[in-house]
Length: 148
Image (tube, rainbow, N blue to C red; front, side, top):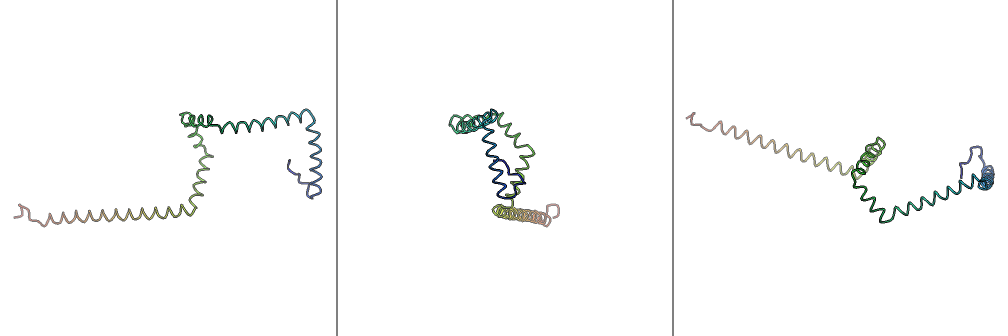
């Protein structure tokens, strides 16, 4: 039904408006224009139901699956993902996901792992530098044939 007008601010006025609207519709749907509208509306709903059922058939599903693998379909899908609206939708979804407790726990664990790896790498480099320094010092302190 149509949206109730603002002047119908009491339940009585609303009921009166609805009754008036029903009476108008009865008359309207008897006119040629109203009959054509009703027929078109019925055909549209029948067509939508038919198309919905057709899309559920195995043949249609197989065709769609095969079509999605074609280069043209892949290019179209990529283009759809590149639109500003699609990018904004993905960005909003990411932002919402990053606020979830699961992501926060994952992120905390990931950062801790990175810190551990970094400190391990730093310690390894320091050990390498110390061993190289020890080698250099031992080479200096060893008597060479020229120093004898």
